[in-house]
Length: 366
Image 1 (cartoon, rainbow, N blue to C red):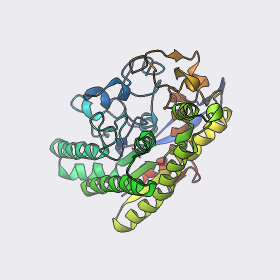
Image 2 (cartoon, one colour):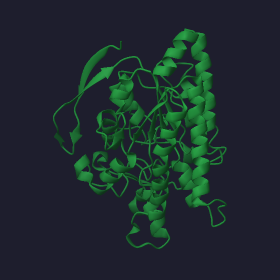
Image 3 (cartoon, rainbow, N blue to C red):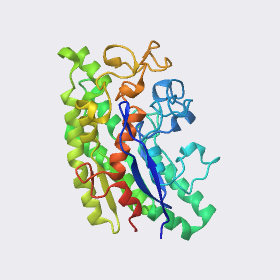
């Protein structure tokens, strides 16, 4: 049986501390992380890419780590908080497992990646390649702890995904000759995602967590795009958000189907769309003052991805108090926002995470 210990963290809302939030922390289950910049802890530092797909320069990382780790935020991301709540160490990037223990899990996520190999091809680690790296880790585990222990680790582990965001962005930025209908394109995305889940299942994985897509049309970068194409005030781009909604409505159907097909397959979905949209439209409820403009960047809404001055546009502004801002840069939430979302993912009610919150999912035996 897993050992249980307790810990408490203070949640700061604006300038006032709310009552202490306590968590029971379960021990043992590993955490394997897949996806894009929402989860990337610095894998793109190690590949041959360009600065647009990296965040290994200040001011990224400055609020918590005090140096840039490669995370596209001012501090920790959702997997970092979940590891803390689950009594695990920080989950290492895949390219650091030579130096770190990996029996507690590995993070394979790559900023800019999608479900499709064509998305940012040549600059990122696509989802199928992330699966290949996971299979490599499974082999290393067998050498390290033996076949039986590996089977136990992999079947008890949590497999968490944030992906398809960049596939949607690729379809938005493509010119009018984009060759697929929305339905065809979604079918391709879901097909690749399903094959990756099945690949992990074949290796012994049983517990899958999926973040659905957020309101993509409301990111500062997409508001700016809307402004540039003539939409007054730079409101949210409905076209982008509708593509996310379409993906989100298909997601539970696919997962339910897999649950019926694959013995022991369990899943839970975090309604990232709901909580992200709520924090954009009701920022004070989450402790923020500003939710349309990013802390770091340039242009209207600081919507140009220039934070750090290493990308195509070199000029950037940095806000005075990052705790006031929902967004750190033009496309990514701040550490404070990720902490709020992680709390809901860990301990939330069925309207935001179902059929299990992560606390109960970690404790679920397979």
